Image 1 (cartoon, helix red, strand yellow):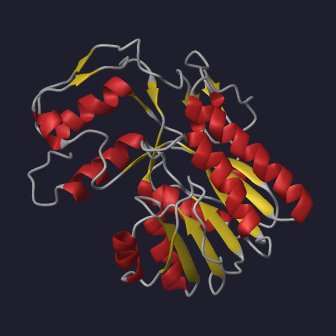
Image 2 (cartoon, helix red, strand yellow):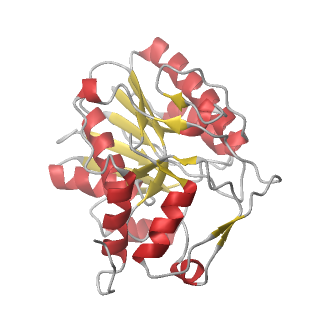
Length: 292
């Protein structure tokens, strides 16, 4: 994507990293944000912010002609997933005067639903059990229809849970207090390190054909193992697990990617334990972290 024009919807923890890497490579990068204050911050990174809200019907500014659209929009508790992830995406596509050559869609592994702890990969059926998973399936179908009518190359990246520096899934205060985890400890925690997620997006930007790719570490940790390791690294008490049956969850499964290797995409942290050690060390560089 170097030297091209890119529009990124969703410049948060992942999107901003992708955007700044693209700017460094020489791309002209537009980014959508709802906030004028956030727009000023993004402009400071060399980005070209566009202020609009994907989830409402307010008038939008004229959008630029672009080569690539990257959708990495997270869930906003103030709106609904349907309004933003489906209707907002549909309106965005319709507002582009020229269909982009390439669309990279940040989907979710929640599309697979509950596999009873079994392994799922890109060939597994999508049987979502949560609103988020169902909405991602609808958005993927919307993009498939759009591509069939325009010739745009669509890559759906089914992202696992993001973690990395400054995002360890729980605050240090919770960890140090001997936290209570209200989820089963014996379920797989499907994760991807932020560095690997960022690089995957840049890598698939060079694809010439459509693809579906699970962006997930192939050596995951059980939830219990993740939090026990996190507690050990920070010298904190081990956590307690009390499952909360009332909480909406996407089900138990171990997600892997059988397609990543054929695309030549390599992870730095395909072992989630190694990625966690890196994330803790970079989050607390001055701390005496027992990472050995």
